[in-house]
Image 1 (cartoon, rainbow, N blue to C red):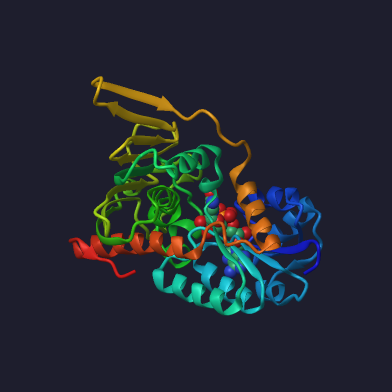
Image 2: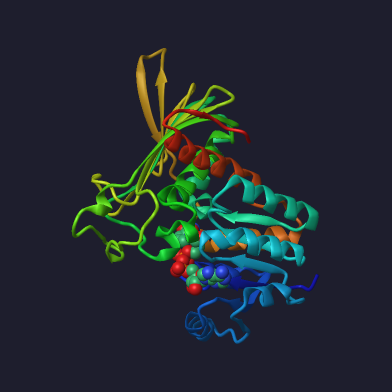
Length: 351
Ligand SMILES: NC(=O)c1ccc[n+]([C@@H]2O[C@H](COP(=O)([O-])OP(=O)(O)OC[C@H]3O[C@@H](n4cnc5c(N)ncnc54)[C@H](O)[C@@H]3O)[C@@H](O)[C@H]2O)c1
């Protein structure tokens, strides 16, 4: 392998812009090529980033012999075919979340990864945020004891992404479950130590967007063409007896001006809250209730850090910092949520 790993980025829209600084800062990588089906975006981003190798056909980038890492930043429905093609072409792949919208696609991606012997990572940037890393490190020492219940939510008030890549199922695979549910659910399962999910009872709602004048603070009026949910909630049971309540929404009359993202973890030694990183305990000898707070946390922009972590893993032959198996758990639950909502009852999951 050459000293510097050549990176090709596919899909140069909003999220790709947050990846470039990480590839630049990493001592192991350099972005050498970009691909996008929109030639105007491609030309503009090429100019801004100073990259002249531009492909309007992503498969041409994937076929390039000198590219070591492919960074996939397209809408969700294109993640699986592009990732599988890139792995088959001998590239390591960092793929935006969700890895894919269905468990079946993720299983195919895992097969392609195993056949290729290359690394595959899901871009779950919240794992690289200082407060999340600090809490995970603390929990790993046993501070909470056995975590037997979690409550997690990512709730937005009139804050839907209104681009077709998010609100049309044929591009996104789903609404806020698939867009932001993957963030808070991935973080929660990671903190809980990835217990095996066994059942889910879920509901979805599609209401506020239909009112005259409905708007998003990010995109103006809500487009008429929209076929995904706007709210979802679920109750999940795990094989180890733990449970989880999950709520996600882009449009909810909730007390926040933009986004409220929180996680509560309840263990038999202590509870914890993220992102404040408070640890809650009781001292039965003194009948005292103690609230302590984790203070130290790593600095750094998390999207950049996820790219740097992947670059280092590839360069040093380390395991994927966010393995595809973790994303399979996340999507198995969210796919179960959708199926349960349709069936109107709790359903059993086959992972
Ligand atoms: N981690 C995060 O915080 C975060 C935030 C936003 C989006 N995302 C994820 O990033 C991905 C892209 O979202 P975005 O906000 O950048 O969207 P975007 O619409 O801003 O950009 C997507 C880009 O992909 C291009 N594209 C579409 N189909 C393509 C194809 N088949 N091949 C090549 N290029 C194609 C589009 O022309 C566009 O330039 C989604 O999977 C989304 O879930 C992650």
